Length: 488
Image (cartoon, rainbow, N blue to C red; front, side, top):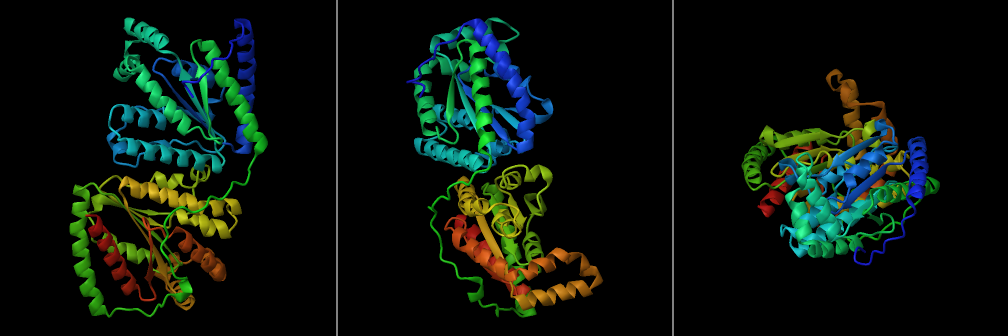
């Protein structure tokens, strides 16, 4: 793309000025439309060092109400960033519905920079490009407008600008070591940037190359593409997105009704097993921390199935400094206004730590599906998006363990009744629990489909037979220990 880039003829200066004023006014009016249509707009600014991204961005954002945009400079990774998945620091920056997020530098800058410095092998680089394509597709499939710009100048122009910045003590700080290295190795960088742009130039999130030799002209190009892109996105509205075919290896899973629930332990067996397993898990936790291996444990199950007690027996074995339990309820307004996976990306553990989710991203294909909180196209698409999310986690190096806590309908009724009739337990039972119970058969159908479509070999489901809570707790500990030992 960069190698074949043909500069279009720049209009006369007065025409450029006139059109900039017109487009600035149009962009200012778009804020209300974006807000009304709940359109999230992510603008990515990439390009050569000293190409003028920052100064042009400064002019563009003057036309937007500052309450409705954020600007992030994606500089060097922090220590925390390096202990999270590659896409973490980028995913957490995505805007809320009806707002803009401008990124000065992005995932492109990170992966191409690491590749050019030799910090990534060709295979690792390709893998990250694939992750980026999935990330961008997931955003656009979920209603985001993603506008990606590359500010292009030639080698001589870059050298002239860098020299000018270095000559002034007030602007010298703006020139990084990498900017100088980039100019010295311009052709090598051009080769990598060209390949990256070609590889990630997708129809739903294309690259726009900005001729940045003249700053006014560059601003006009950026404004024109932004305004037209917003117009097109607003005119399209919400559209159904094709459902991708599953490409993830799946393990066969029985239907819930086929799983016998007669397994149990005596109190003596339970106490003996629990003590032994908790001690073992405690030792493994230290080794996980030393080897910087993250663990993600996802709990789903019927109301009153015993998830809380199960989690308590796991955390009772762990160093409290090395784990966090995330009880997941209905999304808060700022969470609901973003991609549904955003609130889970923001809760991922650091390497060496354990994150336990009491309810998970699978709400998309259960409660959101059955209660009409998302469209059919949304939840049908989510199976693949969830598999992609979990693959990103396991490729990062995380151990991902998913538990479905299973009970039968009669056992649930007994536990509901006990909660309702016991004052100190009444906080555990709500009207919503009773309403959900009335939809047992619908939920069971949705759960069977969920298990069938997301029981991947890299992030498998484990069913905990929990008519006897003691048995389920011991089984969960055994599975967790086995998976950790396998990795270690």
